Image (cartoon, rainbow, N blue to C red; front, side, top):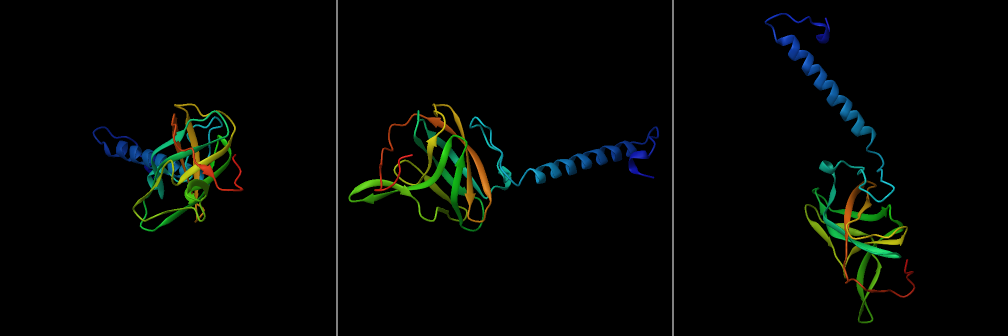
Length: 192
């Protein structure tokens, strides 16, 4: 006789417990199936809200500590924070996307003719095993170019990063006013 069909007998709690366990197990299996079906591609809110990461946060190979984005009315802006590798092997962030920009690039600031100049980071950001890689103004950062709307202080901006193995990790960065980070661009680099 199936567990759910066992009649309740006065004074016996076992059938009720079995029914509860069956219901809880079925719920857990359904939830697991939902998570597995939703894990292939990240979904993003159209207004720049928080994305659903392609990898659940608890299992994300890379997380972003203290993410923030420089508020900007138009053109471009930078995203900063610390990339944290939760795995035992080095990982490389090779690209990114955002709901607020036409183009997203990984950038570095390098010395060009004695001046700091921003340029795309060849090879991406390598994040050592069980360690972090800081993204900050005047150094490595994520550049959002061709903004499709103003990014005001307090706004949440969705960003999705792609690793060299194809996995993606989404996060949300809060916008804040910041006056620094006015680097020049390397010769020949478009400004947005």
